[in-house]
Image (cartoon, rainbow, N blue to C red; front, side, top):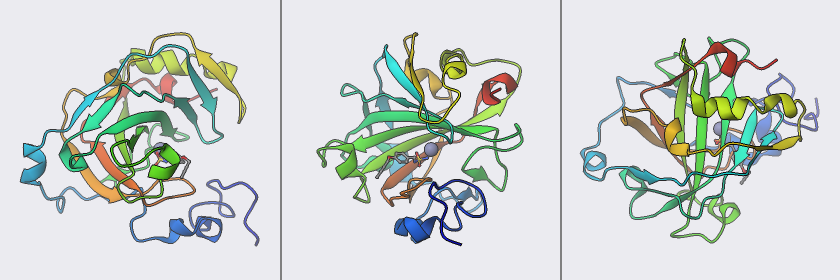
Length: 231
Ligand SMILES: CC#CCOc1ccc(CNS(N)(=O)=O)cc1
Ligand SMILES: [Zn+2]
C-alpha cells in the first residue's frame, strides 16, 4: 500500500515502512537500539574526558503537541554540552521532548537488555563548533548530541516534569502549542548518577538522519503514573 500521508506507528505508516519516504531510515546506524549491557564496553577515554553540561533557566518556553508526544522548543545559546564522546566540540540545546506509551510498562525508545521503561526524555543539542544551524548540523554524522533519560513510574512526582505536563490539557490536539508559565531548568531533568551509555545513531523519528551521538543515562528519573499518561 502507498505510505499513509503522515508517518506514525501503525503497520501502514510505522518504522517498517519509513524508509520508503525517508531513505535514512534504512541506514546502518539507526536508533533506537536495545542496549546490551553485557557487551557494552567501558571506554577509559570517556572516563578521562568528563561529560559536562551547563543550562540556563528559561521562561516563556513554548510547548507543542507534535502528534507523537510533546516538544518544548528551547534554543539556548548560553547552554553547553561537551566532553565525554563529544570530542572538542560544543553542543547547544535546541529542544527537548518526550516519548511514552499506552501503559507504564512500555514507552521508552531505547531498551536495556530488552527492558522498556515507562518513557524517555530527549534533550536535543547541535554542534555549534562546526555548524551554523541545527538544520545544517543534522546533515552531518557528528551534528547532534541527544541526552536520553528514562522514566520510571513511582510514587514521587517530578516537579519539573509537572510544570510541563500541567499544560497538556491546553494542547490536546496535534499542532497546538501554548506557553509554559513556569521557569524551566533542564538540569533538573538529569538523574543524580551520571553514568551513561553512548553510541553513534540517528534521529528515532523521521527523517531519521544518521547524525546523532547518543548519550543515554543509566539511572532513570522517577515520575508518577499520572505524569506519563494523559487524558
Ligand atoms: C533533520 C531534521 C529534523 C527535524 O528535527 C527533528 C528533531 C528531533 C527529532 C526527534 N528525534 S529523536 N527522538 O531522536 O530526538 C526529529 C526531527
Ligand atoms: Zn526523541
